[in-house]
Image (cartoon, rainbow, N blue to C red):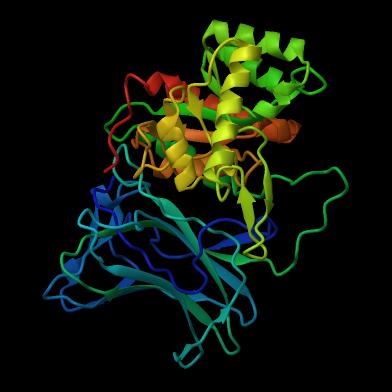
Length: 470
């Protein structure tokens, strides 16, 4: 894994997470030569005053045995790499995706090298053409992982081949250099042609289908993990952060019962976030179930806010004010206090962990948490301003892609690129899972069990915090 945090600038619609309708478009992988750098720089033309500024190294790999590390130097202020050309058809939409540890700042907080990745289209004479920008279909915000150094994330962008285009290639450039400079690692480039046919509309009640994913790609990722499961470290630690539990007609929704039964049968721990206002009604069966599961010790029930509320922001059209983001200190204080108090009254124990609705918080939340004696762990909290709490951060490995939609293939891809990164707090919403999505969740957890993962509760970190944010 990598050891520095980098800023990564991506051209042509490189954005950071997902529009599901575009994600469901059919994709055909194109034969990009040596996009994984397993054959060093074969298929890549390097234009640099010092070619050593672009090196293929084992420590730069996020998949396989090798990856590309770019680091400009004083004697090499400019650097460009161009892949071997691949045929292109005017009017067709193409995407390039890859994995990188780019994003964030270096430890000194100074600007570091920017690496630009773009698609280059050319006509029959070899003249470079201006591409047509396409709509983004995937957004990923690069965030540094605090426990085992930076994690890599998938970046993806798209462009439409312009009139006259007969070929395309991937170009990687260093576009700025300031001291001190740090390396950028990139790996696993894939070039794809996207269908220009929109997916058919969903039938009523159908839900979102599982996005297509090349079964051979899944097999390759599984094989890569099997060949080197932990990259010289230890098996992963996993917190399953499951949101939005509450009584349904006084009872526990069958989806949540199924999660609890599965966890018990497989001897793993899970955590379930309760929306507290649901407990203001008479729900003795729900309360008893929670008390019994809590007493068993393998499920932690945590504070997921009072009502998970949101309302239009009168000062910003199209924006929302959320329960713990934009509301006043007094409002947030009451919601936190009332939630904790109701847990004591109805469940017989206080919440000791908190995860905000929408994972959205502000300075008032921080102040409320600083004053709260019950909460010890803040999931997806502000790592730079932890309010005296243990912070469990979010990273690129998740259960759902996007929210509510578990996908084993997407989970596996993120996991394979980030083996050895340590602790992962993975969010899911069982109340919204149909049978197909339940099957995807089970495949994900079965995989983690096979990897000898240690499943932990948020409260397990009270006496043993995961580590300081770097």
